[in-house]
Image 1 (cartoon, rainbow, N blue to C red):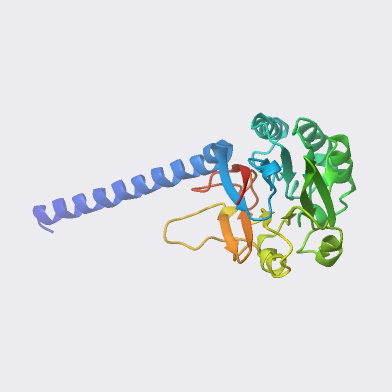
Image 2: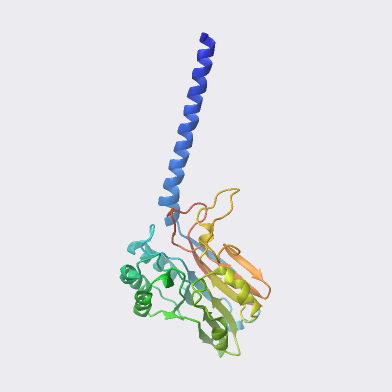
Length: 287
């Protein structure tokens, strides 16, 4: 092999090594960011929603939605849970709505830390909650005790009405859809004859069924995590019943649906990339 050929070969090998090192550095940096930075970088997102059935007495009504906490999973330790609760309360909400998946597993091990976080949640009209698929995947009594300790009203196929100046805003909640505990007809039967109706349902794709009932102006959901790891030009990977409606505000005929990516992680991997964890602030406006 000539000297020139050896030089060219050497430059080629060095170039390949440099590219490999750059690729490794990018992968390492991305991994550190996705596991250590973005999961802790909470976004406070305000969503303005106009509801035709909303009475003017509820103009500007503020609902803070928290979803998919996944306690003891990923970064969601006791201190981080408390931080999320404090951020939610700092928004000075009229109502806080919790839309499921407080754990990934191990409800009994998470009871005390969740009760502590729930006790930090404060809103003018209190806190309401529904169950998610992870919550119903095992004995959920520890979670129910944590709700009681935090003075949170659990809506298992039930309705909670809020009154302002003689007008009503009705918050309905269905139990988990995935595990076939949701009973929409039972829930609808409890709706008052007056006031705008908002539905809490953990799985967002249930929105098609809820919208078809023509009983609700808005549904709030979580479950999908917004895809959690969002890569350019790649489809988002989401769980069943969270594949049609993934993140953001959708219009389903007369009903709107907001899907929050939530604040916790599920996996593996326990990482978030290009999909910041979100504390959602829903502000209601009358038409």
